[in-house]
Image 1 (cartoon, helix red, strand yellow):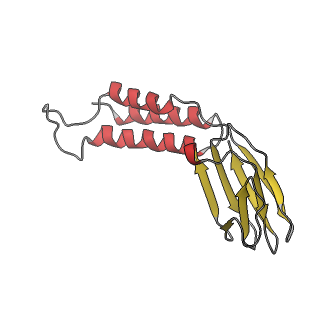
Image 2 (image 1 turned 135 degrees about the vertical axis):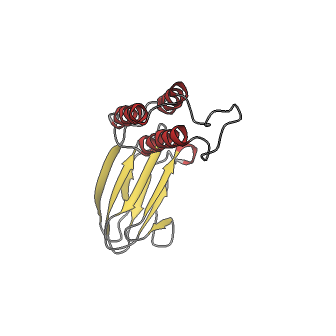
Length: 162
């Protein structure tokens, strides 16, 4: 059975390696996967005995293989963008990007805002993000088109994309 110290060290190294590539939701997911692996490896399958007479926990090699599998894809490099939306004016926040895999749009201001991809939003057209709210798209659901923002009363925004 793998010792707690060895597993913690491997997870720490895996987390550092992922985070070195930049902040991203993918890095957070990989860290979570590594944490789950540690819990399963140390406690066995819900604390019960395995069918083979062992405690049901993962071997050190199994833990290492799972961490390496979680780390096999390189992390997504992200870029942050922020700005101010002038009341009643459409703002082009991001250009079209066919390689986009992740986007988080956050309303950091005092008024709601609308967004649309490849079309101009208005007060009645587009998707609304309330004050302090955000929308996240990743993987296959991530729009690749140009992002446009609008706020009837003006607000501020923060976008992370990769």
